[in-house]
Structures are given as structure tokens and as C-alpha cells.
Length: 239
Image (spheres, helix red, strand yellow):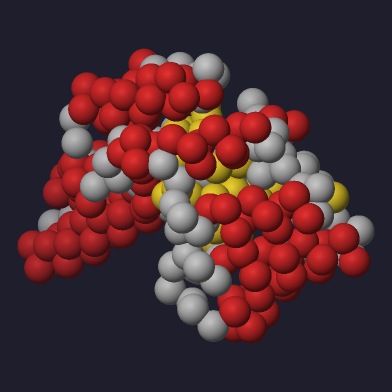
């Protein structure tokens, strides 16, 4: 906004002034859109987006789901712990899976109660209510209240930032997105993710609701161990 005001004050040529003003407006809109949709840029709030150097964390969104048990079986096979960001209404449908996740020693995070497309336009109070309602549901099943929150779609804005602060949650993003909700071919999925799992330290976003994710996870865990990348859980790195 300041740039626009300065433009109107200093530029005498009206057509040039309009061109500059429009260009600045477009740039501002692009920056704002990227800030809203790309959580790892920490545009509106600070999120934990990376693991320490040489380590990787596997995280799973949108459960609990029938397919969650396949993911749990792979994690148990390799003695690996992970974090599951659960949707409140799914916890109501599958409380036994929520309990199984907890019993196997994995961390449970909050992923809102309804995970609607309207999340990005919701008020601070509504986002906070979604967080609190989900925490209450998870606590009623496991006896533990989550402290980690991953905003649906990774969308952030000032209202969401205020809601996270109000509920005393820690925002968790990611540095590697698997796109397992879009890539159904396991070979393509694995080959997309593997090159990104270097020793810079990563948090990997996957979805236990996808039936092919478990097999891809199995191969990615093997890849990490063959390349000296330690697999840790978020409880080892959170702020």
C-alpha cells in the first residue's frame, strides 16, 4: 500500500503511474497468495517445517481411516514412529484406530474437526473451535491432548494464526510433499519423493487415507536407512 501511495506522489505521467500501480498490485496479490497457501514460508506464523540435519519425520494427514492400519503395520515392521494429524469427525467414526495409533507409540496431532474447503475463510473463533473440539475428542479416546496442529491444506492467514495462538498449539508444516492423494502409481510416487529425502532434514507429508501410501512408505523407509538418514518423530524436534 505504501508503494502505491509513493507511486501516485512521484510519477507525473498518468499512464505510467497506472501501469506501475497495477504491476505493484499484481505483485502484492501473488505474494499474498503464496503466503496463504505455502505454510513453509512462515508468512503469517512460524511453523515447524524441517527436521534437524540428517533426519526425516514421516507425517500422515486426514485419518483415522480404514487404510491407517496398513500404514501402522509398515511402521511396526520397521520399528518406526510417526505423527498422525487426525480429523475430529473421523475420530468419531474410528475411535478404535485412534486408540491403536496411541497404543503403538505414535504421536497424534490435530487436523481440524471437519477439514472443509472453507477453512481459509473461517473466523478466528471458528478455527479455534475446530481445534478445541478435535482436541477434546482425541483426549476423550486416548487420555492425551494434542499440542501439534496442521492447518487443513497448509493454508494460513492472520485469523488462523490467531486461533493457533489462542489454543496454544504448535503449527506443523512440511518440507517434502508426497502428493500421494494425486499420484496413484506407487513407482512414480516413490521416485518423486526419494530424491528429496536428502540429509538436509525433512518433514514428509503423506496421507494414511490413501490405499497405496503404505507400500510407498515401506520403500521410502528402506531408502532412508540405506542412505544413513535417521527417521525420528516430531516429538524429538518440535518447538
